[in-house]
Length: 80
Image (cartoon, rainbow, N blue to C red; front, side, top):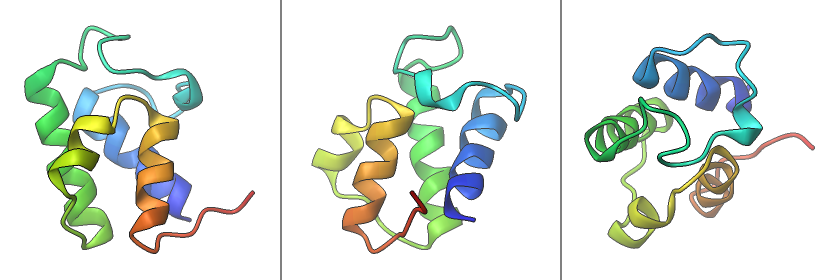
């Protein structure tokens, strides 16, 4: 459920299909993921998971997998 919610945040923020290979997404790896879209993604994630990300985590969130790891710090669980 959490992985699907995170994928939805990425898909809606970047306007990409939900069948995208999210595991390979990296900051600036796709045209849509620029600095402005990054902040929009942060807002989407904070809203979807009802959290407030620390500045260091916002800066460190450079891929889909990094985002998952960061969310674990905030108590979000992902099934293996």
